[in-house]
Length: 91
Ligand SMILES: [Zn+2]
Image (tube, rainbow, N blue to C red; front, side):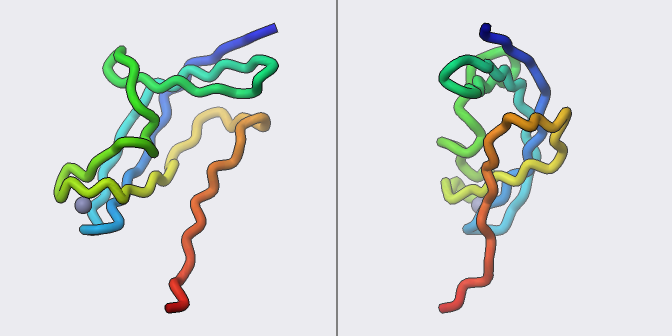
């Protein structure tokens, strides 16, 4: 049986080029079905791309943008981890 839930998620965006950060809020509708969890993103009531795809830095326009979830609401034990691997570059 499919179920869905709607949550407001805040993301902190970080530009790898200029180092700028900004916040973005998305309405996320998550469907749970036999295929697994599927997230649909909305901003201002309109369908939107996921925050980690097709986002440009408002300062420099670069698309090398990292997404840092900074206020998770209602942790979902079924949610897939989207861990961002951050580590010191050895080179
Ligand atoms: Zn930038």
